Length: 114
Image (cartoon, rainbow, N blue to C red; front, side, top):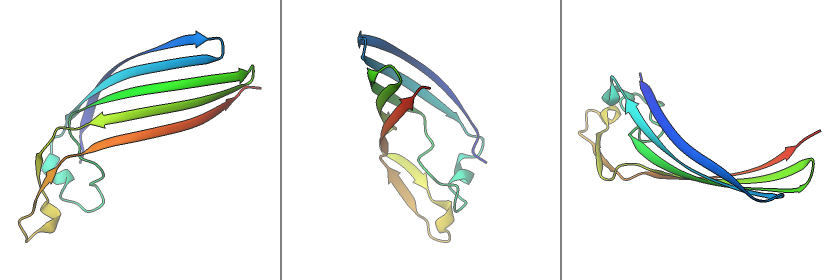
């Protein structure tokens, strides 16, 4: 139903000190839907606006001792503004949604090495 996606991403990390590493990156996603309207037509398939997007990412790692690293990550996804989406699952009503979507994600982690 959904289709394929092509993603290209670039990133880097830099060790500021022996215990602190920072990272950053950017990604581009190009969606390739054969039936995009069908994706929005079935209840349960609509999760997020499936559109081409750009994301920026930042990370931070702190390694206080040899076997433990604490990780923090942040990502923001930009979707195109003012997308007009026809909600087929609302038939017989003629419903069009104006979507302005974005995603903010935060991740925390602990890496234990034995």
